[in-house]
Length: 276
Ligand SMILES: NC(=O)c1ccc[n+]([C@@H]2O[C@H](COP(=O)([O-])OP(=O)(O)OC[C@H]3O[C@@H](n4cnc5c(N)ncnc54)[C@H](O)[C@@H]3O)[C@@H](O)[C@H]2O)c1
Image 1: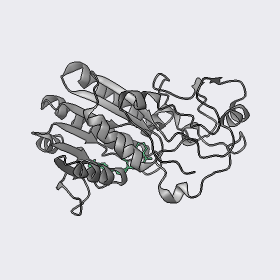
Image 2 (image 1 turned 180 degrees about the vertical axis):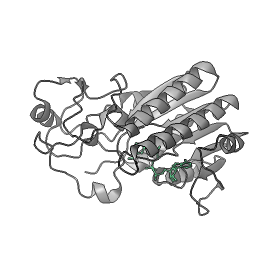
Image 3 (image 1 turned 45 degrees about the horizontal axis):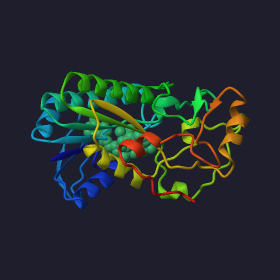
């Protein structure tokens, strides 16, 4: 059985459907009611450690997406407290109950999303898993801490953990507005938002991550292959950062500033959707 947290959410619903389509046994959970899901559903606040333990009993894996999904929706204290508490309860119980795999929804916002679009200057581009996480605000920090909780349980128990560090999921109505005007120093856009993710491809990665062969702990960046803009990415980088950013291979044309080479190599993930 695979437990899906955050199952009433935008991504959770897709992941539940995909697992059911592939004949996997699913237990869906969320703090909100979601009786319309095509799987057994249990309502649960993941901040309740006892309830989380009850739900995970007998599970093989958990795809953990339950969280406040961005920095702008609640007071930062509420976001940090909710997300870290949910992550700790889910991953501690998973380790104690001997689950084989945790798939954790991290975020590229933990790499450096900032209210000030000029604040995050990457060390190099494209961003990959080796680039330090440099959160500027508590939502990103909650994801960095969540990844650390995953590293800790993977080090300390047989449970293996995959963190999917995907960037902002652009729904079809947002993708319909692309291309966006390219950012400039006067009208900046925080770098991780130059890239976008498609919910269908992110859901596919969540399912692939349940069975992928990994040891202990791995994090993967996820984004669509191209940017939100029409202009060549290197031109936008130079215009916004001058020579302050090392430019590595993989940024030709309108390529994304996020490399997904590791996810393609180790998860077998193939992003299929592009707004163009
Ligand atoms: N949407 C994005 O752009 C994006 C990008 C990167 C990472 N993520 C991460 O992906 C995951 C899913 O995001 P989404 O866009 O589907 O968000 P969503 O808000 O649509 O779904 C998240 C679900 O989590 C549930 N939840 C929150 N706190 C809970 C708690 N204490 N107990 C039980 N359930 C709780 C909510 O009720 C909600 O249904 C989140 O972890 C989010 O941080 C999202």
